[in-house]
Image (cartoon, rainbow, N blue to C red):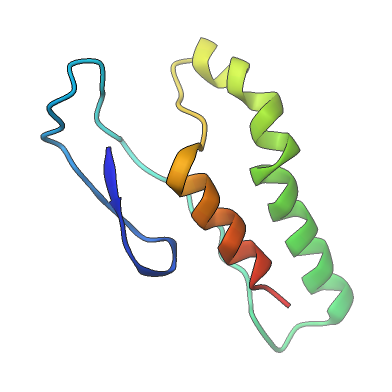
Length: 88
């Protein structure tokens, strides 16, 4: 469980009372320039990140669970999509 912060940051809640919950071990972040890059490169990075949080997340959900990983879902997924949408 986590509390959402500004601009996609999180604060993990390691004392979650839900007995079915487990602690987050880490998040992976993607960094992208918001200016100063060639339009074609910026578009390619944005498209790749959109794939990761779109089709990529859907395709990886079953595999992630089978390997013991948690896919990106809920507020974290929604925040990622918003932040990627802010890229030029």
